[in-house]
Image (cartoon, rainbow, N blue to C red):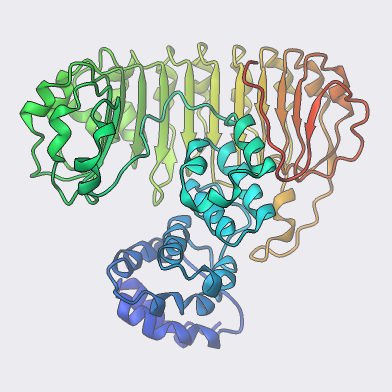
Length: 503
C-alpha cells in the first residue's frame, strides 16, 4: 500500500489539525485496502475530537465517516465521542450506517456501549438495544442510567426492557469504583433544591465553567465528593470544606496529569479514594482508606516505591489509562490484606508474587491484551470466591483451575479461545474448533454461577457434577445439549439477563 496516497490526511492527524483532517479525509477513498492505524495515530483522534466539540457545524466532520471506513482499529474513546456528536446533533438517521461500520468486534468501553443503547433506542431497534444493554449492565452500569435517560422513555413499559433492568446484577459488583455519575451545568446545581440534602455530589469543572455552585455551602450531608477535570489555580472554598462533617469518600480526577492534589482533602477521615497514581507520592499514609481506585501510567515504579502506603487498603482497583500498558510489579504480592482486586485495561503479565494474596476473595481482570495463556498463578489463590477474567482469548484452561473449590461465581466471558474473532474483518476468518469444557470444572463443587458467554465451548457435560450450580450463561457459544441441566437457569439468547443476587 502506497502511504503517499493518504499522506495529507495522516499529516493532518499527526498535527491534530481538525480542519485539514476534514478537508483531506476524501483521499482515503483511493486506498485499495483498509489502512491499519498505529497506536500513536489511534490516540491522535482524541485531539481531533477536542476540536470537533467546538465546531458550530459538526456535520462537516460527520460527513467524513464514510471515508474513515478505510481505517482500522479506532480507539473506543474516539468512537464514543463521535457517537455523542451524532446523538447531540440528532443526526442518527443520517449517519447511523457510516458510524456502525467503524465499530470493532468486541466492545467493553462503557460510554460507547451506553451511547449505542441510546442510538438503538431512538431508532426503536429493540433487539440491538437489549444486546448492548446486556453487555453494559454486565460490566457494571447502573440500571438507573437507563431508567432516567429520556432516550429510553419509549421502552419504559416494554416487558423485556423492564425485566432486564429489574433482574440485572453486574457481573462485577464494584466495591472499588467510587465515582457518582451525576453532573450538569452550573445553573442546574444552583436551581436544584433536591440536591441540598444529597449524600453524593459530582462537580465537573468543565460543566460548571470553573465555578462552584452558589448552593454548595448548604450541602452539609455530603458523604462523597467527586471533583472531575479539576485544575490547579482553582482553590476549594474553605467554608465549604469545613461544613463537610460526614465526608468519607473522594474521587479526584484532574484535567492534566501531574496537577497537585489539594492537601486539605487529606484532613478528612477518608475510607474511599479515587486518584491518579502519582498522588501516592505526596501522601505519607492512608490510615483509614479501605477502598482505593488508581488511574495508572507507570504502576510498576509507583507500587515499588509506595506499596507500604497501601497496607490498610482492602479493595483495590488498578486502571490503566487508555494510552498506556502496565506491568504489574512483584510488589503487588506485599498487599497481603487485599480482599478484592480489579485490574482494568492494557496490563501485561501477572507476577508469581500474586500467589501471596491469600486474603483475596474477589478478583476481576478486564483486559484488551490478547494473552492466550491462562495465568496459572491465579489458581494458587485457594480462598477466591469470585473470579472474573473478561476479554482474554485463552486457548486452554489449566487443570489446576479445579483447585479453586471455594469459587461461587466464575466468569470467562469473551475469553477462552478465539471464538469471537471468527468473523473479524481485520484479522480475517479464523477457524477455531469448539472444545469440550475441561474436566477440572467438575471439581468446582461450590460454584453457583458460571458465565461462558462468547466462549468456544460446545460440550459442557462435565457440569452435571456441579450440584449447586444455579445460573449458567451461554450466549454466543455453540453449546447444543443442555437437557441434563434441569435445575439450572440457562441464558443462551441475547436479551436474556439475570444474575443471582445472593450466592
